[in-house]
Image (tube, rainbow, N blue to C red; front, side, top):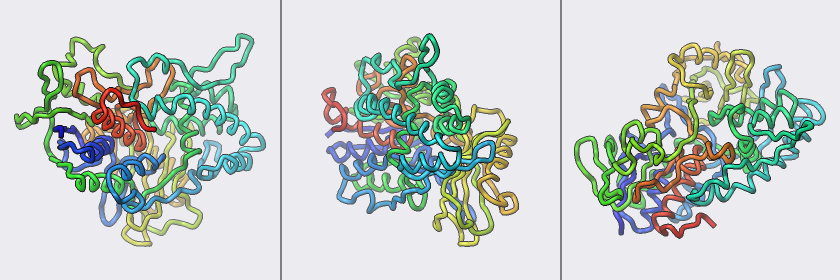
Length: 479
């Protein structure tokens, strides 16, 4: 039985902890804050509840697998999952609206034809066929297997973009794919919104980011009753059932290294905790900033540090407490696309009784990703203006609002930025840190490590780290 220390109590770290405990190891999680969940938080006030991190779940199979592998109770006995249908309503800058069904290729094509005109659905469908090729080519190396020591095969973009012009120039970014293949500015905006949801600028993101809408529109969108925080509660409870020990308000300040490998951690109170393996669930950039990288990763040799994506955007969330009941015909998620200087925002209206004081009120969250700004007041006001297209009489119904910014994310997780899923192409620039660090005995889990950000991807990182520790270098990923 090995002694394993986990730094941080995010979803990826807890997923690793539960799996390692089931394998017979003694696992202790040290969390610098007062609670678990990482970026999956809950704001409550006056009977209203709000998810301040992700509000929806994709690929629930990742957490179904976690619960199957770590106990007798399956996921559906611990939380209630509901398919969101329509998956999203899109309000475009010209006022056009389109409701896209959940996980229905034919239904999506019909909805786009009805809203945008004949042929729009076929163009989007043809694009998704090519996106599927990129998904099939990268699914295992980017999601189900540990990151290979040689990542050069992933440097080339797997998206089979259409070529045009006399010189048959290839497309290299998602924005180029949109302009060349979709043409309609509303379809261009639709594709771009999937990238912006993770903080990826379509003008910079590789063409392989086409897998993001493919993943959602193929595998569906799900809501966890009570909010996504309920999923974090369930994972935490599963860890406790498996006798994982949690120590809160315990900041790790260093990874102890002896004889060229990680042998424990040092806490802010001066204590040293020995370990046979250390799993760092804290964001990789935070490890750089705080110096929790040990002598095995010296500042004089930055080329030895694990990579992380060039993401410089953060999530802003407005938590809105509204008087009045949710109107008939309201949908769970509305994406209001940018017009002029206004941001593209996502408005979530769960209609969940657990998140409101009574049926005469409603809780709504409005989110946007943007570059890190020195002040958020004006940006939050522009977000509220955008949200009026999704919520009738919004300002008249508004009782109060709280604004959550990347400054709050930094305090809660150690990084202000929002990590996104691993993407192939662009010379490997969009690949996150490998789960195995350059310092033997130190592993990375969570959104800043392979296979990247998002609830499902973080859960996968926990499975990969557990497999690497339990099975060693021979581990080849899920089967």
